[in-house]
Length: 244
Image: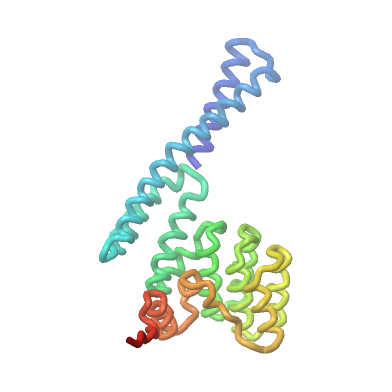
């Protein structure tokens, strides 16, 4: 990572100059070298992330345009990859964004390689990767992915429910109940976790639609169910008849 190398070189150079040229003892030069390292790292990080955020904002405008300019938005995000060698996690964050875009437009094959390289703290991208592994019948990879995501985002109720849902769909209801119980330890009193734990214990299907669009973005419902939800959300459901 260029940032780390440049900052380390700057700190070491200052330390050597103080020790050799200024004849300062190492114990006195070392703290100054550390300060230069930290300051350089922080400054370069700020500059790089400012450039990355500008690119991501431009991509967001393309994606939110009417109609959305999806391909242009993805291409714009790709351009941020050049900052990957400069700053830790930048490549993973960009991969997560691109993978999520492909996944949400149901291009699962295109999404998969990006999601595999996604930043582990992006729990939505990791959830999509977990679902992708489930659909590919790779149960151990699915579990590994969800466990990693939950370590980074233990307070996301939907993530616990999504993991349990995938386990239950694969027939592992015992592990699903165990997961929901673990979720309740992290989020005591969570109504959705409690309700789904009771549902799984009674051999019933978990109810996830209460999460709305957050749930539907994982594409585990039929297209008909998603369209019905969207119609109802837009007021296109059953209308009340007003009698005069």
